[in-house]
Amino acid sequence: MHRLLAIFILLVTGPLLMSCTSAPGYKGPASNHYDGKRFYNREPAEKSPWDLMRLAWGSLTKAEKWPDWIDIEPQKIAQERVYDGISVTFINHATFLLQVDGLNILTDPVYSERVSPSQLAGPKRVHAPGVRLEDLPPIDVILISHNHYDHLDEATLQALFERSEEPPLVLAGLGTGKLLDKLGAERHTELDWEQGVAVGDVEVLFTECRHRSGRGAADQMKTLWGSFVIKTSAGNLYFAGDTGYGPHLAETGERHGPFALSLLPIGAYEPRWFMKDVHLNPGEAVLAHRELGSARSVGIHFGTFQLTYEAIDQPVIDLEAALRQHGISHQEFRVMQVGEQWHLEGSSHQKHDIAAAR
Image 1 (spheres, one colour):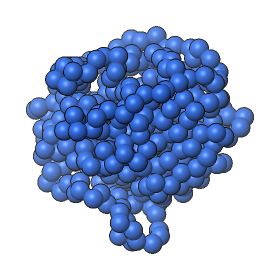
Image 2 (cartoon, rainbow, N blue to C red):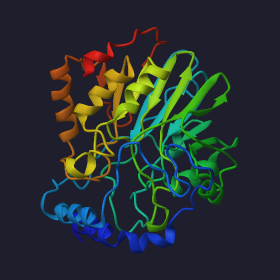
Image 3 (cartoon, rainbow, N blue to C red):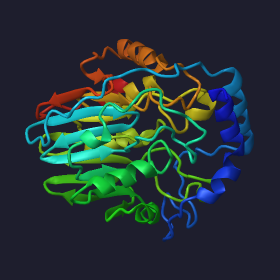
Image 4 (tube, rainbow, N blue to C red):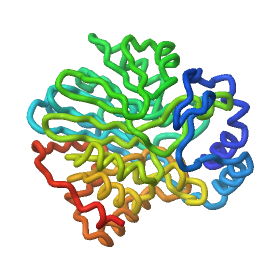
């Protein structure tokens, strides 16, 4: 079956298929982003069933064709632990290994063939992970930005838990803990926005972003989505996960910046009428880089799974155009190759002029 037709069927029948796989949600007091039943953004990100049908139909006629497979050579991690500076390894999609202050931190780990409630249908990877799971160093912390299938992969988490002599600490948004318990997580902490934990000498905070959550029809917006700020001796790091553009980016920069490094999504942004509320496009990612006060940024969330209409190389093309427009070099905002490892020295960078990003 043609991939786009499979995506169409999944989108149209997804609410029925996924209702049985819905994850349990959060129960707690109301707040400025929780109404007692569901979480919400300060700026709306709701879509109607008609919008979903329109998106699904467009996937049959407007989505660019991706390659079926791209051969890559998985790499070995250079060091088991990093104590000086920051080492960043791009594994795939939004999965990065961050090594800093002796900690190994894994973001939104996804190793499955498909990001879907079923491994028989749905978006399928077009290349292998840049580092084999069995070649990862011991993982101390796993960051889960939200519970969508391309960010919370049950099979991958279970494999990571089984291989670990010391159970990793999993950090995720409110309401995610019951699913993590089911998957065998021995140590996990649910976080609200602006809550954090200390792990050794590193502080990890969960921060506001503009997105959604849900693994089925019954749990939409019932677990909290967010980004992560990681405060280290080598500088502050920012992992966006998924986010649309909004004032939370500049506010995070003011509150927790400047950042030595930010991991910012640049893919899955077309069509804009549907995606702009929940996914940055490359031009907005460049604005986010400036507003966060990031000395260096790396593009994430592109080139592994076809989730939206744009061609596989369009995010990089559009990012290059945005960087030229804003006079930002490729050394300042990078696109890493799958499996590439990049070492940054400790940061003493000054914050960018936020007004210049407007």
